[in-house]
Length: 393
Ligand SMILES: Cc1cc2nc3c(=O)[nH]c(=O)nc-3n(C[C@H](O)[C@H](O)[C@H](O)COP(=O)(O)O)c2cc1C
Image (cartoon, rainbow, N blue to C red; front, side):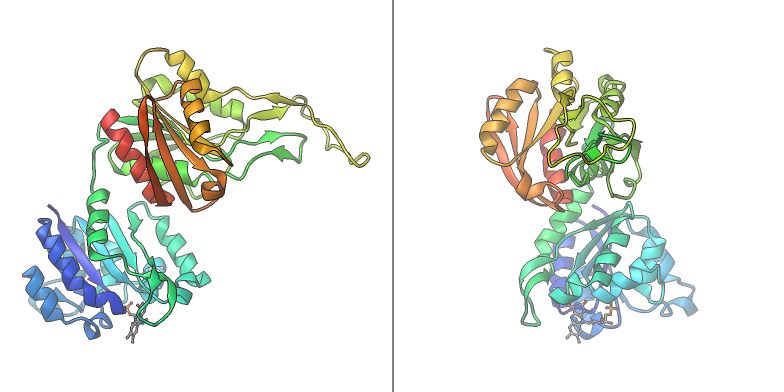
């Protein structure tokens, strides 16, 4: 039960917000609504006031003469903020740190968890400016997204841009509020590792580090103390509550993991570590000689298998492995689960996850049927994985 500030922008999906407000009330929340000027043309303020049982605000200036400052008071008292629908224009204002209307000013004031439900024409959603604004907002530690979903849009187009259903938005809000990892500690690995071949070249892979980072951030939001050991990636630092340790090679990752693994409740190995390194790293740049060349590679240590071995029959910490395959996923996952002696193995196909913002995973468990598939943006799949991990801690 929380004090929720519901911001409604001038997208056609605003007509769905009385239903959203009703579901939020039904879930036990107290709801204050802020409408932008454009939203007030698309949904009746009176409908929202009637459903929430509270006055609906639109202007920063309304209550000033009677001593109120709504942009501070509403935002500071809100325990959760939802913006639905979030228009392209609103995302631009929010990403630029504007405070030119009541809703964008509230966003600058609040530090509460903020759920954004964008809705707009597909071209607007895919425009590089909107992508940039989404990326800027995603870097804030309190921001989560729900939707947009793909389908038929009010403007007659087909594609991503539809606001998530009110029930989906409420479910996302509930998920955002979970604190089921309070008092727990997690060690998470992410990204590729790189093995130098000479001073200018390396052996690497296409892992983006997004899944591991999403897991670390979601676990921190759910109350855990989290350390993220991350290979070289093109990602911003993780959100607040996550301690970052940066490494390059598999051996460095192994060292950092071994220094910490016994002190945590769970180790989640989402990194795609390089399986081989050069047998000899050339001290100078290798010269091009002839049409073919041969590199001698040596197997790297298998960090997960080593933890499984070292842990032996002790059940703590919980070990969660990942595997990425290009074919025969379930078979490979079952074999790895047994060989590495881990408690859960998250399996995905390279073509459905590696280097992508989305993933499709199955979670394999010893002696039980696999869970899933779980599919969607990596932030959502990370929550699905933690829903399986949390009760085991
Ligand atoms: C009928 C109508 C529907 C609109 N629907 C959307 C929409 O779904 N998404 C969007 O980003 N903009 C939409 N717009 C444009 C916004 O209303 C406009 O950019 C406005 O400045 C947004 O203001 P706000 O962000 O303060 O609400 C629509 C405009 C009209 C006239």
